[in-house]
Length: 61
Image 1: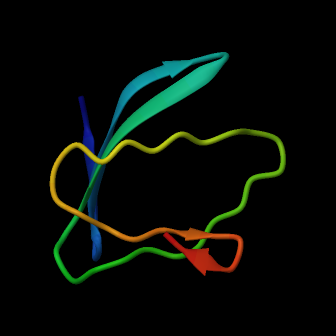
Image 2: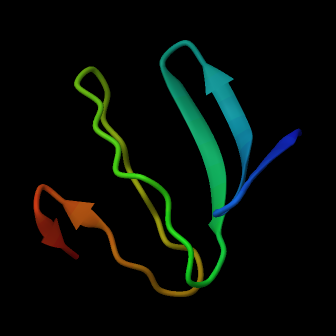
């Protein structure tokens, strides 16, 4: 498994199949990454440890 390092943290691709992709994403404390929008796919996020905030439409949750 290869890890890609970014200024905000890092991620590893755990599964890459024709119908889905699974990534493990680590965001460093106090860092964030850009807002993203995908018209042709759904995303599901699970916080495994720590806390965080996400922007959904224009609301921070």
